[in-house]
Amino acid sequence: MRDALDALERELVGLAPVKTRVREIAALLLVEKLRRQVGLQAETPPLHMSFTGNPGTGKTTVAMKMASILHGLGYVRKGHLVAVTRDDLVGQYIGHTAPKTKEVLKRAMGGVLFIDEAYYLYRPENERDYGQEAIEILLQVMENQRDDLVVIFAGYRDRMERFFGSNPGMASRVAHHIDFPDYDEAELFEIATRMLERMHYALDADAAQALREYIALRRQQPRFANARSVRNALDRGRLRQAKRLFERRGEPLTAADLTAIRAEDIRASRVFRGGAGETH
Amino acid sequence: MRLTQGTFSYLPDLSDAQIRAQVEYCLQQGWAVSLEYTDDPHPRNTYWEMYGNPMFDLKDAAGLMAELDACRKTFPGHYIKLNAFDSTQGWESLRLSFLVQRPRTETGFGLTRAEREGRRIAYTTHAYATDRAEGERY
Image (cartoon, rainbow over all chains, first blue to last red; front, top):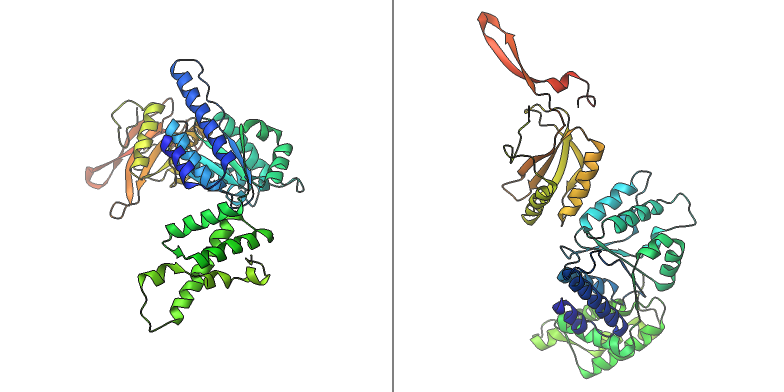
């Protein structure tokens, strides 16, 4: 458990409020466990959570860490994470939803069920939507099989609030709400350097400066997805680096050439020419 | 007459805790567990009905136990067996299979004699339960 908490601290940049909340929850669970050992209280504390925040702020990553923390404390037996969206839970025709949802729940037993963009489950504009059926099955399992699985709902903050507002049964069963703040520029740069390290690439001073400028510009643009946008930018940088090396055919390549990402690889991005960084 | 079939057939029926422990073992070995039911107890009846799909992605026995509870509720008087399938190349077959529910009264089998040419006699076993229509047997 301590390992998982340390890993959370070490491997994730920023996210101070999230780390504090996770520590608090871990402390609560540990104390609960000790209390149970001396016979004070036998009921499992409610563990279902909701992670809210913009895309790319690390919700899935923290959920995975949370699964291993809960496993370390013995609140889930296996500690695996099953990540699903509406499509995995809700069927397309009558009678299709319940087996689908139950299938997913069975797979998640003993671990953590992570429902991304959970608000799509509830579509008030269509009264015949099958999402409501999935919600009811979920609620039943969340209540009756608390020892078997923990459910984490994730999504944008305002939409999640509306989702919980229109499903009071759900809101009252979710004990912990954790809000993920956006990263600032320094944190995004730190994330980028760590990603590059993991992929065995290196930035020289010029390239680092270019990346800083890129992040500052990209943040102002629409559809900015925090760490995910940074990773996409790095992937495109790698693409350009590969092209640059390929076009130098004939010259010998050194290991340094293969690892170096230069300023030109980053500055070739459309973001510097006033275009959108990503087309999706 | 008590039906004996599959693994553990000469042991008393397994309790739920014991079933759960067996399932945990199967999952540790990477086998896929599934449930089947029937009301035709003849030993050569290999065509049991599947209850749901085989659970290939299961990580914990709780998923199977929930399914077993549902199956017992739907078919309170049927035989239910649990199968564990090993998909490893070379095995690709059931590694473990045992009964997890049986009807309260098991009617047993009768021996039928058929007289053939030259005073020869052919024998066949016949489950009394199958005298009645499917669904009305137990």
